[in-house]
Image 1 (cartoon, helix red, strand yellow):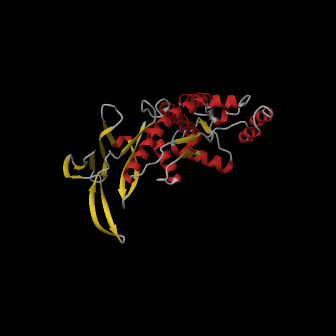
Image 2 (image 1 turned 120 degrees about the vertical axis):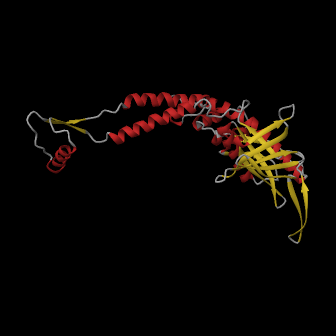
Image 3 (image 1 turned 30 degrees about the vertical axis):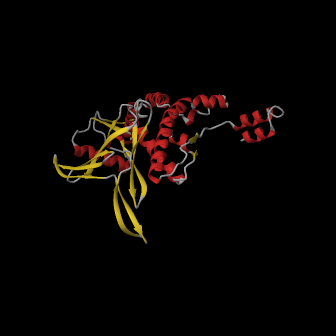
Length: 334
Protein backbone atom coordinates (compact mmCIF):
# COMPACT_ATOMS: atom_id res chain seq x y z
CA UNK A 1 0.00 0.00 0.00
CA UNK A 2 2.85 2.38 0.88
CA UNK A 3 4.64 1.61 -2.40
CA UNK A 4 1.38 2.15 -4.26
CA UNK A 5 0.95 5.61 -2.71
CA UNK A 6 4.55 6.83 -2.55
CA UNK A 7 6.60 5.07 -5.26
CA UNK A 8 5.89 8.15 -7.37
CA UNK A 9 6.49 11.28 -5.34
CA UNK A 10 3.33 13.14 -4.31
CA UNK A 11 2.78 16.67 -5.57
CA UNK A 12 2.48 19.24 -2.79
CA UNK A 13 3.11 22.95 -2.41
CA UNK A 14 4.81 23.98 0.80
CA UNK A 15 8.13 25.88 0.91
CA UNK A 16 8.51 25.17 4.65
CA UNK A 17 9.48 21.56 3.92
CA UNK A 18 12.24 19.80 2.06
CA UNK A 19 10.48 17.33 -0.21
CA UNK A 20 12.46 14.12 0.57
CA UNK A 21 11.99 14.56 4.32
CA UNK A 22 8.28 15.19 3.94
CA UNK A 23 7.76 12.10 1.78
CA UNK A 24 9.76 10.04 4.28
CA UNK A 25 7.61 11.39 7.12
CA UNK A 26 4.37 10.52 5.31
CA UNK A 27 5.67 7.00 4.61
CA UNK A 28 6.63 6.52 8.28
CA UNK A 29 3.26 7.60 9.73
CA UNK A 30 1.38 5.57 7.08
CA UNK A 31 3.41 2.49 8.02
CA UNK A 32 2.66 2.92 11.74
CA UNK A 33 -1.03 3.61 11.08
CA UNK A 34 -1.27 0.54 8.82
CA UNK A 35 0.00 -1.70 11.63
CA UNK A 36 -1.72 -0.06 14.63
CA UNK A 37 -4.80 1.60 13.14
CA UNK A 38 -3.51 5.04 14.18
CA UNK A 39 -0.21 6.91 14.23
CA UNK A 40 0.83 10.20 15.79
CA UNK A 41 3.23 13.01 15.02
CA UNK A 42 4.66 14.99 17.93
CA UNK A 43 5.94 18.49 17.21
CA UNK A 44 8.70 20.08 19.29
CA UNK A 45 11.37 22.75 18.89
CA UNK A 46 15.13 22.60 18.71
CA UNK A 47 17.27 25.70 18.16
CA UNK A 48 14.10 27.67 17.38
CA UNK A 49 13.23 25.23 14.58
CA UNK A 50 10.10 23.09 14.52
CA UNK A 51 10.98 19.37 14.56
CA UNK A 52 8.87 16.22 14.74
CA UNK A 53 8.93 12.56 15.75
CA UNK A 54 6.49 9.76 14.92
CA UNK A 55 4.86 7.98 17.86
CA UNK A 56 2.98 4.69 18.15
CA UNK A 57 -0.67 4.88 19.11
CA UNK A 58 0.01 2.65 22.15
CA UNK A 59 1.77 5.61 23.83
CA UNK A 60 -1.10 8.08 23.36
CA UNK A 61 -4.40 8.75 25.15
CA UNK A 62 -6.22 11.56 23.28
CA UNK A 63 -9.10 13.70 24.59
CA UNK A 64 -11.27 15.59 22.09
CA UNK A 65 -13.81 18.38 22.15
CA UNK A 66 -17.42 17.58 21.25
CA UNK A 67 -16.63 17.54 17.52
CA UNK A 68 -14.41 14.45 18.11
CA UNK A 69 -11.79 16.06 15.85
CA UNK A 70 -10.12 18.89 17.77
CA UNK A 71 -7.70 17.80 20.49
CA UNK A 72 -8.44 19.08 23.98
CA UNK A 73 -5.65 17.21 25.76
CA UNK A 74 -3.13 14.46 25.05
CA UNK A 75 -1.54 12.10 27.55
CA UNK A 76 1.64 10.45 26.37
CA UNK A 77 3.27 7.73 28.48
CA UNK A 78 6.35 5.64 27.76
CA UNK A 79 9.17 3.73 29.46
CA UNK A 80 11.95 6.16 30.32
CA UNK A 81 14.35 3.57 31.73
CA UNK A 82 13.93 -0.18 31.17
CA UNK A 83 16.24 -1.18 34.00
CA UNK A 84 14.47 0.80 36.71
CA UNK A 85 11.12 0.57 34.85
CA UNK A 86 10.71 4.31 35.23
CA UNK A 87 7.68 5.62 33.32
CA UNK A 88 7.29 9.15 32.04
CA UNK A 89 3.79 10.59 31.72
CA UNK A 90 3.28 13.85 29.82
CA UNK A 91 -0.07 15.66 30.02
CA UNK A 92 -0.27 18.15 27.16
CA UNK A 93 -2.83 20.98 27.23
CA UNK A 94 -3.01 24.41 25.60
CA UNK A 95 -1.53 25.90 28.79
CA UNK A 96 1.60 23.71 28.80
CA UNK A 97 2.81 20.23 29.67
CA UNK A 98 2.71 18.51 33.06
CA UNK A 99 5.51 15.91 33.28
CA UNK A 100 5.29 13.12 35.85
CA UNK A 101 7.88 10.38 36.40
CA UNK A 102 6.72 7.17 38.08
CA UNK A 103 8.99 4.50 39.56
CA UNK A 104 7.73 1.45 41.46
CA UNK A 105 4.19 2.86 41.34
CA UNK A 106 5.28 6.07 43.09
CA UNK A 107 5.68 9.58 41.69
CA UNK A 108 9.39 10.46 41.95
CA UNK A 109 9.38 13.70 39.98
CA UNK A 110 6.81 16.20 38.70
CA UNK A 111 7.04 19.50 36.83
CA UNK A 112 4.92 21.88 34.77
CA UNK A 113 6.46 23.74 31.82
CA UNK A 114 5.48 25.58 28.68
CA UNK A 115 5.45 23.75 25.34
CA UNK A 116 8.89 25.03 24.39
CA UNK A 117 11.58 27.61 25.11
CA UNK A 118 12.31 30.31 22.55
CA UNK A 119 15.93 31.44 22.50
CA UNK A 120 16.94 34.96 21.54
CA UNK A 121 20.32 34.94 19.81
CA UNK A 122 22.92 37.64 19.21
CA UNK A 123 26.07 36.73 17.30
CA UNK A 124 25.13 33.05 17.75
CA UNK A 125 25.03 33.47 21.52
CA UNK A 126 21.88 33.05 23.63
CA UNK A 127 21.03 36.39 25.28
CA UNK A 128 17.49 35.62 26.47
CA UNK A 129 14.96 32.79 26.74
CA UNK A 130 11.17 32.87 26.80
CA UNK A 131 8.61 30.25 27.85
CA UNK A 132 6.24 29.79 24.88
CA UNK A 133 3.18 27.71 23.98
CA UNK A 134 2.21 26.67 20.45
CA UNK A 135 -1.41 27.77 20.62
CA UNK A 136 -2.38 24.19 19.69
CA UNK A 137 -1.80 20.72 21.12
CA UNK A 138 1.45 19.65 19.35
CA UNK A 139 0.19 16.22 18.29
CA UNK A 140 -1.26 15.26 14.90
CA UNK A 141 -3.25 12.07 14.39
CA UNK A 142 -3.33 9.87 11.29
CA UNK A 143 -6.14 7.31 11.11
CA UNK A 144 -5.59 4.31 8.87
CA UNK A 145 -9.30 4.29 8.00
CA UNK A 146 -12.62 5.57 9.33
CA UNK A 147 -12.76 2.91 12.07
CA UNK A 148 -9.01 3.10 12.87
CA UNK A 149 -8.52 -0.60 12.10
CA UNK A 150 -5.13 -2.11 11.34
CA UNK A 151 -4.48 -3.56 7.88
CA UNK A 152 -3.71 -6.83 9.69
CA UNK A 153 -7.11 -7.10 11.38
CA UNK A 154 -8.53 -9.59 8.85
CA UNK A 155 -5.35 -11.49 7.99
CA UNK A 156 -3.21 -11.82 11.12
CA UNK A 157 -4.52 -15.32 11.91
CA UNK A 158 -4.01 -16.35 8.26
CA UNK A 159 -0.42 -15.06 8.32
CA UNK A 160 0.25 -16.94 11.57
CA UNK A 161 -1.17 -20.13 10.05
CA UNK A 162 0.91 -19.66 6.89
CA UNK A 163 4.08 -19.24 8.96
CA UNK A 164 3.28 -22.24 11.19
CA UNK A 165 2.81 -24.54 8.18
CA UNK A 166 5.94 -23.19 6.51
CA UNK A 167 8.04 -23.68 9.67
CA UNK A 168 6.56 -27.15 10.15
CA UNK A 169 7.48 -28.16 6.59
CA UNK A 170 11.06 -26.93 7.01
CA UNK A 171 11.29 -28.79 10.32
CA UNK A 172 10.05 -32.01 8.67
CA UNK A 173 12.57 -31.70 5.84
CA UNK A 174 15.43 -31.12 8.29
CA UNK A 175 14.42 -34.10 10.41
CA UNK A 176 13.76 -36.59 7.62
CA UNK A 177 16.23 -35.57 4.92
CA UNK A 178 18.09 -38.89 5.57
CA UNK A 179 16.34 -42.23 5.25
CA UNK A 180 15.54 -44.21 8.38
CA UNK A 181 17.02 -47.71 8.84
CA UNK A 182 14.92 -50.48 10.41
CA UNK A 183 16.97 -53.11 12.25
CA UNK A 184 14.86 -56.22 12.91
CA UNK A 185 16.11 -58.95 15.26
CA UNK A 186 19.04 -56.91 16.65
CA UNK A 187 19.65 -56.23 20.32
CA UNK A 188 17.84 -53.01 21.31
CA UNK A 189 20.67 -51.61 23.40
CA UNK A 190 22.57 -48.52 22.21
CA UNK A 191 25.90 -50.33 21.96
CA UNK A 192 24.72 -52.96 19.45
CA UNK A 193 22.89 -50.29 17.37
CA UNK A 194 26.01 -48.12 17.25
CA UNK A 195 28.13 -51.12 16.22
CA UNK A 196 25.70 -52.00 13.42
CA UNK A 197 25.66 -48.40 12.12
CA UNK A 198 29.48 -48.25 12.26
CA UNK A 199 29.73 -51.38 10.07
CA UNK A 200 27.17 -49.96 7.63
CA UNK A 201 29.09 -46.69 7.22
CA UNK A 202 32.51 -48.34 6.97
CA UNK A 203 31.81 -51.51 4.95
CA UNK A 204 28.32 -50.87 3.58
CA UNK A 205 27.51 -54.26 5.17
CA UNK A 206 26.47 -55.69 8.51
CA UNK A 207 26.29 -59.17 9.99
CA UNK A 208 22.66 -60.27 10.42
CA UNK A 209 21.68 -62.68 13.24
CA UNK A 210 19.29 -65.54 12.51
CA UNK A 211 15.81 -64.23 11.79
CA UNK A 212 17.05 -60.63 11.63
CA UNK A 213 16.68 -58.12 8.79
CA UNK A 214 17.87 -54.63 7.77
CA UNK A 215 15.59 -52.35 5.75
CA UNK A 216 15.74 -48.74 4.57
CA UNK A 217 12.53 -46.77 5.14
CA UNK A 218 11.63 -43.71 3.09
CA UNK A 219 9.65 -41.10 5.07
CA UNK A 220 7.05 -39.38 2.93
CA UNK A 221 6.37 -35.74 3.85
CA UNK A 222 2.78 -34.70 2.96
CA UNK A 223 3.85 -31.92 0.55
CA UNK A 224 0.75 -31.92 -1.69
CA UNK A 225 -1.66 -31.30 1.19
CA UNK A 226 0.53 -28.48 2.45
CA UNK A 227 0.82 -27.00 -1.05
CA UNK A 228 -2.97 -26.96 -1.37
CA UNK A 229 -3.28 -25.26 2.02
CA UNK A 230 -0.53 -22.76 1.11
CA UNK A 231 -2.40 -21.77 -2.06
CA UNK A 232 -5.68 -21.40 -0.16
CA UNK A 233 -4.08 -19.28 2.56
CA UNK A 234 -2.21 -17.12 0.03
CA UNK A 235 -5.39 -16.40 -1.95
CA UNK A 236 -7.29 -15.46 1.21
CA UNK A 237 -4.43 -13.29 2.51
CA UNK A 238 -4.40 -11.25 -0.72
CA UNK A 239 -8.21 -11.20 -0.91
CA UNK A 240 -8.99 -10.24 2.71
CA UNK A 241 -5.87 -8.08 2.97
CA UNK A 242 -6.90 -6.32 -0.27
CA UNK A 243 -3.53 -6.67 -1.92
CA UNK A 244 -2.26 -7.35 -5.44
CA UNK A 245 -0.68 -10.77 -5.97
CA UNK A 246 2.18 -10.15 -8.46
CA UNK A 247 2.34 -13.86 -9.34
CA UNK A 248 -1.25 -13.78 -10.64
CA UNK A 249 -1.22 -10.36 -12.24
CA UNK A 250 -0.20 -11.76 -15.61
CA UNK A 251 -2.80 -14.53 -15.83
CA UNK A 252 -5.30 -14.38 -18.69
CA UNK A 253 -5.99 -11.51 -21.09
CA UNK A 254 -4.00 -8.68 -19.47
CA UNK A 255 -5.89 -5.59 -20.63
CA UNK A 256 -5.73 -2.38 -18.63
CA UNK A 257 -9.34 -2.94 -17.55
CA UNK A 258 -8.32 -6.33 -16.08
CA UNK A 259 -5.28 -4.80 -14.39
CA UNK A 260 -7.42 -2.08 -12.78
CA UNK A 261 -9.88 -4.69 -11.53
CA UNK A 262 -7.03 -6.59 -9.85
CA UNK A 263 -5.92 -3.36 -8.16
CA UNK A 264 -9.47 -2.60 -6.95
CA UNK A 265 -9.00 -3.97 -3.40
CA UNK A 266 -5.69 -2.15 -2.92
CA UNK A 267 -7.25 0.95 -4.46
CA UNK A 268 -10.09 1.00 -1.91
CA UNK A 269 -7.65 0.43 0.95
CA UNK A 270 -5.43 3.25 -0.30
CA UNK A 271 -8.46 5.55 -0.67
CA UNK A 272 -9.20 5.22 3.04
CA UNK A 273 -5.73 6.13 4.27
CA UNK A 274 -5.35 8.84 1.59
CA UNK A 275 -8.30 10.74 3.10
CA UNK A 276 -6.56 10.59 6.47
CA UNK A 277 -3.23 11.63 4.96
CA UNK A 278 -4.75 14.72 3.38
CA UNK A 279 -6.26 15.78 6.73
CA UNK A 280 -2.95 14.95 8.46
CA UNK A 281 -0.96 17.03 5.95
CA UNK A 282 -3.44 19.91 6.16
CA UNK A 283 -3.09 19.95 9.96
CA UNK A 284 0.70 19.76 9.72
CA UNK A 285 0.85 22.74 7.35
CA UNK A 286 -1.54 24.62 9.65
CA UNK A 287 0.78 24.01 12.62
CA UNK A 288 3.87 24.99 10.62
CA UNK A 289 2.18 28.15 9.36
CA UNK A 290 1.15 29.09 12.90
CA UNK A 291 4.65 28.55 14.31
CA UNK A 292 6.50 30.42 11.54
CA UNK A 293 3.70 32.96 11.04
CA UNK A 294 3.58 32.23 7.31
CA UNK A 295 0.71 31.22 5.09
CA UNK A 296 1.26 28.22 2.80
CA UNK A 297 -0.74 25.89 0.57
CA UNK A 298 -1.88 22.60 2.11
CA UNK A 299 -2.94 20.81 -1.09
CA UNK A 300 -1.39 17.41 -1.84
CA UNK A 301 -1.90 15.01 -4.75
CA UNK A 302 -0.85 11.36 -4.63
CA UNK A 303 0.48 9.72 -7.81
CA UNK A 304 -0.34 6.05 -7.43
CA UNK A 305 2.04 3.57 -8.98
CA UNK A 306 0.14 1.04 -11.09
CA UNK A 307 1.30 -1.39 -13.78
CA UNK A 308 -0.13 -0.72 -17.25
CA UNK A 309 -0.25 -2.58 -20.55
CA UNK A 310 1.72 -0.10 -22.67
CA UNK A 311 0.91 -1.89 -25.94
CA UNK A 312 -2.77 -1.23 -25.35
CA UNK A 313 -2.09 2.42 -24.50
CA UNK A 314 -0.06 2.84 -27.70
CA UNK A 315 -2.85 1.26 -29.77
CA UNK A 316 -5.38 3.62 -28.16
CA UNK A 317 -3.17 6.57 -29.09
CA UNK A 318 -2.91 5.36 -32.71
CA UNK A 319 -6.67 4.90 -32.92
CA UNK A 320 -7.21 8.43 -31.60
CA UNK A 321 -5.36 10.15 -34.48
CA UNK A 322 -7.76 12.53 -36.20
CA UNK A 323 -10.22 12.33 -33.31
CA UNK A 324 -8.39 14.27 -30.60
CA UNK A 325 -5.52 16.77 -30.81
CA UNK A 326 -1.97 15.66 -31.57
CA UNK A 327 -0.84 17.35 -28.36
CA UNK A 328 -3.24 15.24 -26.25
CA UNK A 329 -2.11 12.03 -27.98
CA UNK A 330 1.58 12.80 -27.34
CA UNK A 331 0.82 13.67 -23.71
CA UNK A 332 -0.86 10.28 -23.12
CA UNK A 333 1.62 8.17 -25.13
CA UNK A 334 3.71 5.94 -22.81
